[in-house]
Image (cartoon, rainbow, N blue to C red):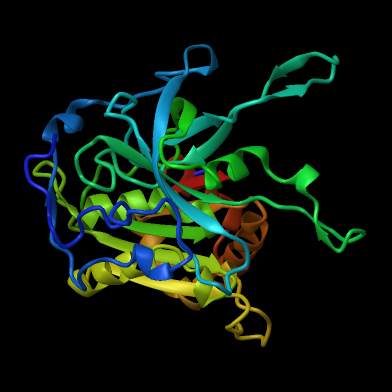
Length: 345
């Protein structure tokens, strides 16, 4: 998993689209052009689209076209992650927090021995409804190349690589992409524009949260003026594996009272017990503040590999118990109030 401008803002115009080549290993390709953010004007008719849902399906799929594919991690990152911009001409609209389906080309043999098309893979959209160029004509995906290391071969086994992720990561400009969706209503932004929004991501799970901070801090939308607090916790292996960090830091510099960011770098930092710093350890450092915020109506979002959740929930339960709270009752209350939003894969 995871995306007719009246005026475009020059400093952050097409942060990812500016490179003429289709892919690059230079991390500066994703750096914002300025250290502070200037809000971009956008085509406001896209504020009237409601909540699009399954506009296109496998039998009536949408055909997008790749505009660019860029590597957005450094040379020492664990794995390869790409930022992919797809031209849609605004014909498959979506809202922040939703996903697209991608159907890779080719076929497979199903359990009945029949040759069938590949299935749909879901990817969280990594741009707002206005796209990276703020004109509503593109959507972006954040995709990590899925590979399989074979211990017997002592090398990657190409027969077991991820079909869809490799197709997307290897795509050249002009490549047609078969798409479905949009879908999803779990990770939608709260209606309250003064809300506290706590985002917890691992790896490409940052994609929907990029749509959040771009809508909050990078776009000029008269009917959406975020006045609350956005707090991002991001877990990756090392500094080279950070995603969109230059864009994040630009927003932090421009809105220091509204945007906070904390990284958990498992191969570079240690937790308070001397072990590796995982995402739950970083969140635990701020447990008192987070519990207070949640008691007062904050929204907490989780997105990334499903393996992140057991450690996080175990930590939250332990902290709740230390505070004399009945964790099950407290957590059920948060879910009942729609304060907890989980989308893992």
